Length: 479
Image 1: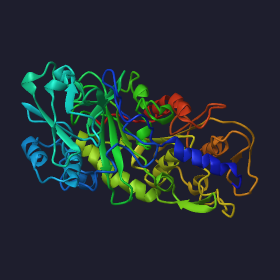
Image 2: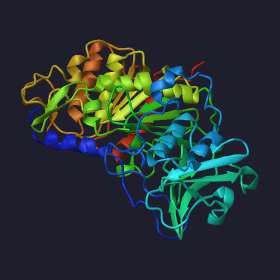
Image 3: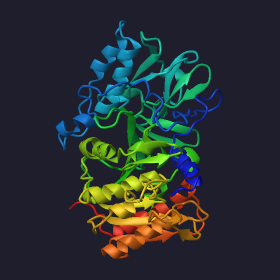
Image 4: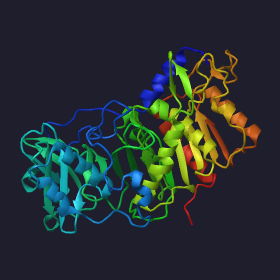
């Protein structure tokens, strides 16, 4: 695959799943969210770069195997956390570590049945800081925050007896005098409304909500990344649920995702998916390496080949953490893994190398030429040539694009003549699967959206097809 435009395409593939950006805070009007994400694939949450290291016993994925599967979130340590916030000797590093620790252990804010503790880091906060929420009628005077000794951390304690509305489903933000409203980047449960992102005092019981766990440092990949989840309405720990695990977590179920995102929250909002819990792993600056199974030469340099390390992160850290946190099986028939572009490639690689991990994979516009981009390559490292037997995992493939297919460089990997949405090599892999004995409608599904581009809008339009295909292939709630 010698064609020069492949390099431009791959650059687009990396950028297409990066974080979005926006104004850091509003300066007037009603409560609004600030954008906590930067245009950089390595950033998942605003404080991701500050929160260093995994907490000692905070429930980080690295310790997930030690967490009791039926334990759920641990009991509150509100007074312990409050004492650390009040410590006059506490440094920025100490309180950054506290924010990170609590995020992984039980989540922000922290309640003990009668009080709720909120804390944040806000560099350059304007004026006095307050916690404003549905529970105190968004009145700064009712949620005055205390500035910690670090000078950049703030905390507030609210009495549940004074709440105007119950905690479940109550939105909150931070307020800086005179009129700046800031979404809480540390909030574990969060959502979006007409004013943007907000945290939840406690998750709603009548609607889906999102949760995030920032800056996890893996034993298998160097770059930290966040884990996220989208929970079913009314979900409680241990409820029977199907799991959908997605790559490029910043880009899959946020209404402010870059380029519009995949809108997976809308897809699982359709009838028939009420039980589905969506799990997501953010990308990082290592995306092109983490999502590819072999090194390849791109634009004069060699990169890639750390998919095994990434899948170790998934298998040994992320999935065990999610299972312990939510009490779900997230394995075998109860699990689907999906992604687009390079994310589709690594999803297929997972199906090939770990056939018992998931019931089905969703691979949209997958970068299946990887391993054959180097002009000197013989094509043997491309997935279409490495896949030699019928596996146990069902596969959904799709692409947009169209045009004439050919193999001008003779490496056995088909190339598109015009549109660049991996149309030809996707069809080639489909045909290869047929030759291995895969059966359409049973363990092989393929869709071609003629002329569709390589972008989030196209993937958002097709994700429902992938979900339906995997459901028909046996994706099911554990009995």
